[in-house]
Structure formats: structure tokens, C-alpha cells
Length: 365
Image (tube, rainbow, N blue to C red):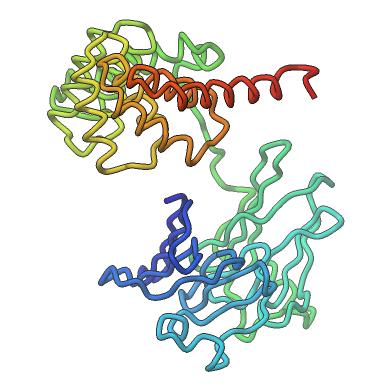
């Protein structure tokens, strides 16, 4: 699994997988209430989002930009019922689905009618540089945009803009706008307090600050699983492995659902040479998350150390299915094959690893 998207009305879920299903699809539509698979998205079609009302699925790719009505897709009718139509979805769409904000070639923003793509207003860039639409407020009265280079955030009051345009007979809406009762010139300035700002530019200082915060949380609540986990991670990075192992164990005792603490404890147990403990944790983790390569790699190394050569070779093989030019996996599997007496297979893996290394060496091409 690579991505999960939930529709605004929480009725539908789209998942994008790394692997193809029997039909060749990587993207699937599910009924959120029942967990039923509602539809496979055809290979070559890319999921681009939901409409704000949750009625439409935006797709791009081989068929061009278009939207498909989710209900017809889930019922299997799809294009047969005329519920698929061309639709431009770049930018962001207002909550009522009528307005779309997208980038303009001159660096500003274009406001267009979502259905017809007709431009209704243009917002110039305040700094003369390129900036991008980010989102509408839930009531649609504000538009937020950001300027990537400067990291600036801009807020446009569309209700006030429409009220001013209405006086010129240029308002784009059907209903008269209701400006927000806010005067930005009289608003209280935003005050920001930087906590331990001196730590921000130094990784060691930042880790120390995080450790102190986690320790402070544990003073007030010794059963705080997240704080034990964070403290365990920082202790591990500092090389204090015994303390890290104890903290990660506490995190899992108070929060069994913290699977990342389990993955972290696998690595710490490896560094401590506790091979059986590391293998047991890796087994638990991979039973639930079989596609996490990092933990599978840990388990392969651990099984080599435990002389469980068949198990190690199986894990290296699984990694090579996804990453066929992974030299560590090839050499690790060769070591396992050698110990099992499969010298021909071991030699083939070592030869492949050698050729990959030559291709990657500077000046080898």
C-alpha cells in the first residue's frame, strides 16, 4: 500500500498499491462503511482526487482529465450511464464545487468557473513572483495561497472582493456576497514565541531538547507510551542502547499499537546482539506490514547471524523481487546459499553483485 484517500463525505476510500491485482489495477475504490471493494480503476488511469461534495472521482492518464460519478462507478455502470465526462481539475476547488483556483502564467491566480473553465477573476501576485493556490476555507469565503520560495502565505477575502465587484456589476456569483466582518488593518498582530530556538540549527541540541520534553511528559504521566517511544529513539541515536531498549519496551507495554516502536526495537536488539529477540520482533512486525523493506532487511541480517540460512535466503529473495539490483541482498543471499551448500546459486548471486558494482563505479560506463 502506498496511498490512502478518504472522500470528503467519508463514504468512499481510494487505495493506491505498489503491486498490481489480477486485473492489472493498482488503484481501487472501496465502500468505507462495509469494506466492500466497489471498483478497480483501470490500469493507466491515475487518481487525482475527490470533488468537494464527494460525488465525483477525478481521474487523469490515458483517458485525459475527467471525472466519474462514484455511485455509477461503484454500481458497475461507469461510462455506460454517461456518468463520465471531461473535466479540468488542476488547482483547488471551492467547497460548493463551483469555483476553481489555479496558477496563472503571469505568476498570479486565476479564478474560473469549475464547470466551464471560464475565467471570472484574476488575483495578481503581491510580490510579482509565482505563487500557488492551497485551499479554500470551509465556507468558501477565503482562499489561501502560498509562495514556495519565500514560504509566504496569502489569504484572499473573496467575499469582500465579490462585494466590491458587485458594485461594478461584475460579481460572478448568483447570490449577493456577504463580506466578513473583519478589518485586517485593525487585527491583532500574530505573536510567535520560539521555544528553544537555539537548538534548531544543531541536530545534537535538537535531540537533547526533544529528550527533555519527552522526559518532562513522563514526569506527569509515567504511562505515556508515545513519550517512552520518542525517548527510546533519541537514546538509540545517542548510542545508549540498553536504555533505548528499556524505553522501547515500556512504549510497547503501554501502547501495543505503536508498531514503529516495535521496528525501532528490532534495530536496537540487533545492535545489542540479541538475535532471538530481534527476530521475534521482526516476525511480529512483518506479519502486519510485510512490505516494509527496512524491517525485512533487519530480519535477513539477524537470521544470518542466527545461522537460519533458509530463512535469511527467503528474506533476501523477497527483497530482490522488489529491488533486483540490491547488492547487499545478493551478497547476503549468496552467503546463505553458500552455507546451505548451494554453491552454484551462491556464485551466480556474487557474479550479479560484481557486475552491478562495476556499472555503478565512477567511469565504468
